[in-house]
Length: 344
Image (cartoon, rainbow, N blue to C red):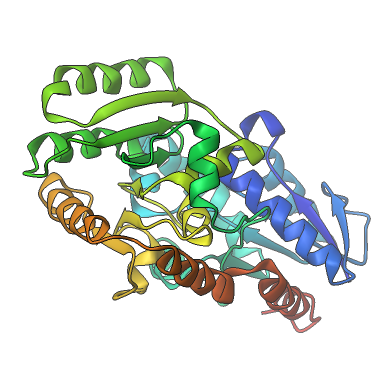
């Protein structure tokens, strides 16, 4: 089998998408699949796998593939999630009806990462084959709480809440500040570490919000963007990872936190809402009132002591379900279905 991965230009790729594609590439290669970069309509043996939407060059390539009868599949990577599709809707909606809809309908399959994304996709387009294929973590690490905190210089008697993501509107950092400031939690001995970057105007606005509410917040530390292996100590050493997002088709950073056994607070606009009752996972609505309640629940659980064995249990849960070694064969089976001459 031969797979051609067609991705956005490097300058346009977000960290999560790049991580997902790299993880998929490695998993396929370990299973003996030939993986090539970019599209080639003349390649009669390959299944093309497009990543992301709203890319005119992808649509043009797909037209040529359809004319030649070459199979392709598409991973939207959350770009048709309700919040994302509404954002700049005036621009996206005409493009969708003129170009993107045909691009998607011409695919042998659409790959989504969760049942939630599949349900949301149904509201936008009806496709005969939607494959639910979760993502894995390309460079996952194990729990190492004490060593990570030592490397970062975090005191043993301080609790750390971590926000690690792009600082953009849909990730909800402003909601987290509002919820913390209005909550009845005692933030003495707690610190919020913000790792990530974004558009300067928006970053400036949330920093101003934090400064204005500083008397009712834990200490806030702005680290800036951290990528690659350097991000892992932050995830390993945190007491709670927060992603109060408005929209997430998967939330790879959530999986990274789970892999190192760090408890997570995120929203019901992520597929992690499908795992109720998991110790160490707190789900809120992307609203201030709901986040206040979940922050209180999470703080109470942490103060009862989140032990090393709790971390190992949470990490084992993530490994059992989301290791690329187990997901790779599922992708191969989906490619094989897409490559059958009978089509969809």
